[in-house]
Length: 256
Length: 256
Image: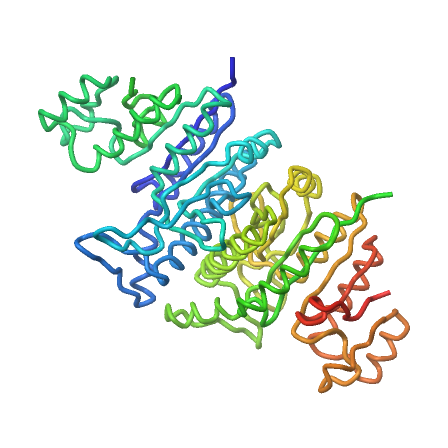
């Protein structure tokens, strides 16, 4: 039987809330077994763009990663956020090591093909190098991924952090018993979006289809749940949709 | 007999010259044995400060690292420069892995004590974790250090890249036969600062004292040469002061 690996994807407001982030990390790091953390961007990249006078480029309501935006993403995600999070985790007693996909060639991506929209320097993941990640785990490090990858030819690429989390989880599933925690703002998948206590404790595929038809689950939650079910289909043992509070106290929605 | 470890400190204009940087890295990576790269900041941090409207704070002609300056250093050194350099080295076929001192707790520093000047978030190195760095080398990675460290309590610190290079070199000298290459703008230590061909091929301590008295060597070169002689005294086998061209073609000044 393979040993447990807990993978935490941090998104939403917790990235920008220093005290809450500490609590969430502390709770997560207490879990038995190996750990990996993947973090999103928070609002700092947008703030920096404004401060630099670099406007966000949008086409048909989609954000485009031009060269200036890629530099900002690289600075904020791989620099400011990643290194501060690594220093914080070190202070909590775990041997964190920050990674972009370029570091150790852990995530190889390719620039998204231009169809209706040219997204610019956005990467779709080709390959997660589970062996390299496992070497880092075996050496006692706790990998902390930011949402920057590379194409193997010297080009960095902006990549969706949820996708990184599910690809890393499925990539590691051959070696470990993987539990993937998707930490969002809400405490889990809610029956009533206005009631943070209406967390659905367990969600299977049939219920998910029904909730979609009924409109209980919608918008931003759909791709996250689709990713979650895909991850389970590809060997991940457990996916938990949670929020900072449910991660700290236990709870959230377990996807079955 | 221990195996060779080549450590390259990249500073000066080469950081901002993409084509030259590729050539220099290519030449360095061809050396037999393990490799470590340490890079300075280049001019991008200053440009970003200006673009963000954050003035550089100076006291008595010394630059102060206030919180805004630390964030900028972290973004540019650990993010933009480090990740682009790692991606470039990956493209050149070596398995680069970028590090701040916080990553894997490889360099522990403490905030510089306030005497005449409060330098702000500037770190003096307490300890290089040679064992952790060696684990990365043993796992097949080529560590690429930026000039950011941490204090172990969650605080990042801006740290001189030359000091990082010599501390990493002396820290690794117990495990490897270390050669330290300090790549500056000039081709080496020059007899005539105006003649780039007047490289002194070898420099020992007695000649260094004489050149200092004669004023041949002065200004910014002095701390670099002091560091070089200290590194030799602490077990580093060879220190070479070179420039991009002498690194590519062979040459520079070997410190004895």
